[in-house]
Image (cartoon, rainbow, N blue to C red; front, side, top):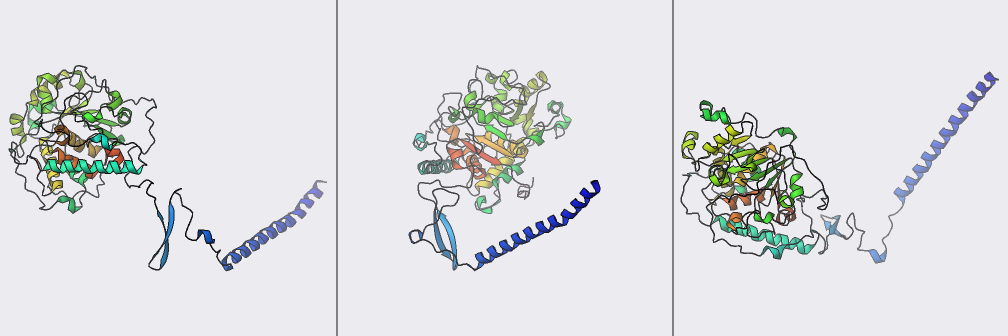
Amino acid sequence: MLQTAKRGNRATLPAAATLISTLILAALIIQTQEQHQQATSPPPQPQPNAANKTQPVHEPNAEAQRVVVNNASVETRSVPANDTVQRLPRSVFHVRWNPNEKFIVESRESPAINSSKLAPPPRLKVSKNTKLTLSPKLYLCHDKYAEQCHNKTAAFRQRIVQVFERSMKENLNESNHYNVDYKPVFGDSFEEQYYPSTCLVMEAGVRVLRRKDEPFNKLPFGRLFPRQKLFRDAKNIKSCAIVSSAGSLSGSKLGRFIDTHDIVMRFNHAPTRGHEVDVGSKTTIRVVNSQVVTKPEFDFAHAPIFRNVTIAAWDPGRYNGTLEDWLTSADYDLFTNYEIYRRRYPKSRAFLIDPHSVWRLWQSLQMFAGNRVIRRNPPSSGFIGLALLLPHCPQVDFVEYVPSTRLNGRCHYYSKEMNSACTFGSWHPLAAEKLMALDMNVADDMSVFQFGILRIRRPDKLLCGFNFFGY
């Protein structure tokens, strides 16, 4: 019986194979006939009532038109006036962010203790006569898909740029306190040379002083410099936020957005306690000027706000002065309190920024401005912080550096002092800085002028490297 069953199975195998082959051959013949019919049949004629209309593609409200270019028929889509005007730059909120969602982002750094007793702001050489010449509320809007909002944002951008351009032409005959004798490399505007502004910032090489730098390698003071690098685990840094101290941050509700970044940079003694909703609570590094380090009302060596956080302090010195000259002729004697701080907290991460690199950054600003002369004073802490951070961070979000429609005339979000010169500049070359920052920006106008966030990406090394200054 077993042998008979095996013979029966062997007999049915050829028959099944023949049946399968026949079915496959029939399917191929049918497919060939259909393709032949499609190739020989004439194209379908359009309906009379739809002669000049086609269905929209991908966009529900787009109208299609047929245009003849070089004897070729090309189908194009025209966007109606009530539709959104598409722009190449993307919003900084390209991932949907729900402001009502509650979450906590832990910082890798130990949190700085923010004192509720705020010291007075550093007294900068700014004019009290500068007032707002526009009403930002007229340009405020939130619906980025509305044409009216797009027009308001574009108009506000134009007004802000005009104010910056006008500010660059004012008070250029002031004294040359720092003995700046820079000679421009290009007679015409450098913007016409198509060299990326981000490369100019990178090539300035803003850096902190190290123990091996002369003359500190031979001085006991040089041993106070930390051995560590400025940023820990720099390879894992993906995004950074620079939080200005602008008064327009008040009411911004950007705190959660700020805290999502790997690195958060703040300036001087700007607090977070009591302002977490608007400015966040995370602080990785503080850039402080020599006034804050030196003046007793800020109590740099003992104030809790300067603990458990990386410090980068700076003083400009003279334009062509040596580091030896800087030690004896700094604008403010930051060295005494720096030494007290480092000896009091030997494990702290407090650095001094190389003053030569600060003036190289000023040269980059003047290079960008071309034949427009900028103020012969050092850049602001905000611009120095950007140059310090950009080489280490692929993407930098600069919050309320260029003013948004929340502009209110206040100097800082944590004080009620009204002085718009803090925004448009009357001592630092602030207008040139912000025009250059706009040139580096990759975010759309809605992000910059309605939400107050610039986005700057680190440039590709292949784009840079001309080294115009010979650094």
